Image (cartoon, rainbow, N blue to C red; front, side):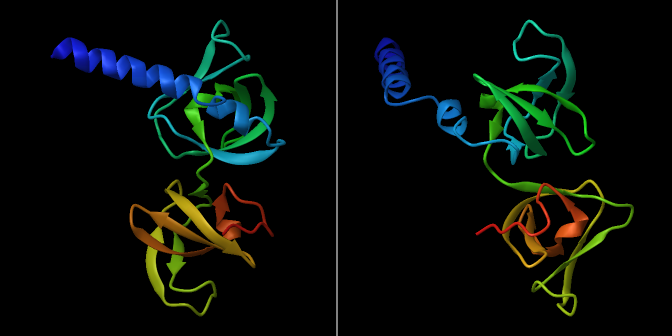
Length: 165
């Protein structure tokens, strides 16, 4: 019985691998620069686009926003919120848009995209959340189910004037 489960799992993996182009190939068609996020719980940034290059950083924070600035095969040259640049394998990244609160003071998450909106939550600098509904200088930031609208100027991971659905 165990042999059959293993064989089925192996054949399913083969079918998935042959079913279409790798995720990084489809994503490689995007023109840099663009924002993405780290999808893995542990992701190494390297000094060049191959595993033979030394690792310069080990990120242990899934969802951290990054900016893809160049593409080389299955490697992406990225910049993190502090401006550090290096190379990561594309399979460690995902298209999920996230933002990190920047500045020295907590930001207010409001019930609507307006300074007169009621304050629902406050997020400290360094807090990471998922972005949606960006427009007119505001984004909806969701931090593990606690969501509200934040002024784009308080976030890294989205450009001023950018719109997200």
